[in-house]
View 1 (cartoon, rainbow, N blue to C red):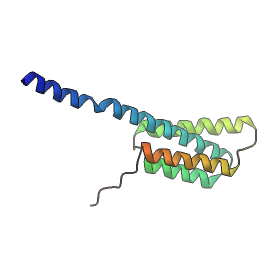
View 2: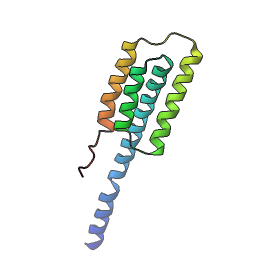
View 3: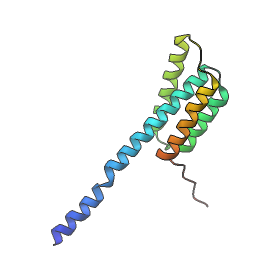
View 4: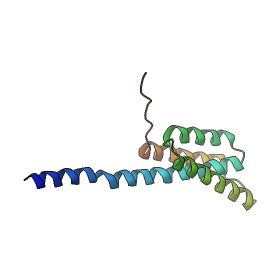
Length: 118
């Protein structure tokens, strides 16, 4: 019986791990998508949208190097792709819609946690 109890406790301790990893990966993908919109907004001189993207990043992303680097890399890649394409920028409505969709996605995958009161 003791072995059963120990095995059960170990199983319970291990079960949440894949869920946490999947949640972190989904959050990372959302942050990369946010960086992509940010880079495109910056390249298209949509400063209001770029500022909103940055606010979303700061509000939702964990303060880790992994998330910060993913956002910065996606921003740079999208900026370079937009400027190298020498094409027209997407209209503001389209970028705003993408940003609004990402805001909803971030709310699900990386909800904002209020800081503890002092």
